[in-house]
Length: 436
Image (tube, rainbow, N blue to C red):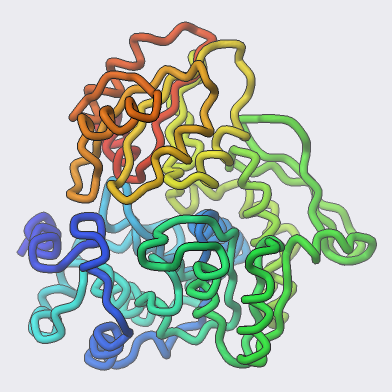
């Protein structure tokens, strides 16, 4: 097989969540365990940091990877889903896994794959563990897929578990409320292993406290640690909406360091804060030099291929792509936008299981909507989305092609307007692909 044939084989042979939803998810860790046993247990040959959460887990993973690269660590990074290329999911330092390595893995282990019959996600996780072990990385940052407790990544025993902000998403699989969802995310907490929670949320803190006590895991909150200040490590951010960078100052060892991150969007301040306080929870040998933190923050996009979040396509008029796809993610996006004095135009798409009413109600009342759909089975049909939104009082034209919708809405903009593409990771991915 060549690379294209290999990826097509994976897509056609293995059940994918983006196509069939919960039917692609396994009810236990049997498959990933069998795969890793067949590969010689590569997940036991690498040092890990494990990151879960509803919103922010991908950003925190990329931030950590960039900082560790700046500190001279050979760093593995596993994230999902991908936007333009399957290989985005598996990186060592600033390089995606090669096409040759992907093909070689599938060809060498095809018999094992057919025997286990894993999901698409399970095989990508196993491939990542195998690749990181063979590359002998110093450290690998692993982002969970969906949930935590039964997520395929959860066979690792990391030196630190991180859980970012919890929100209402995937309730049909993770539970109907924040405490239920937190319980699933808390499944990554390991015995005698510290866990860092990004932010204190009333609905989730008792869940995390209970699980941490049961596992004898030291529990910390980045939001609490940052309030200590004084001589304690802490970070302070500049104010105002700035779609060029995030600026601030961090304090370590009684010294002050300024930084300017290439990430944009106010919601990234919480993610930077979480990543920053992870270091003090780790062994001394895994604490980056203070200067490396600033260097890493300045190059998250460049060193990790970060994309799809507050992705500025154009500045006047302002066009932003953001993969936020639940109410918390959309609200964070809206809170990060400047006031240009113009009207907001939104090209919106969503998976069929999303709470459309709750999400659409967050936008300004004069928002001009257009509806579209990604080319994945789980995407809500654009015409159905239009009809559903109309019943809720929101009008707009439907486009079955993301590219057509994007190019058409662009022509409607005045210089002071804002255009957003949001609601679906896969919609954003298709617009990105059409624009490159």
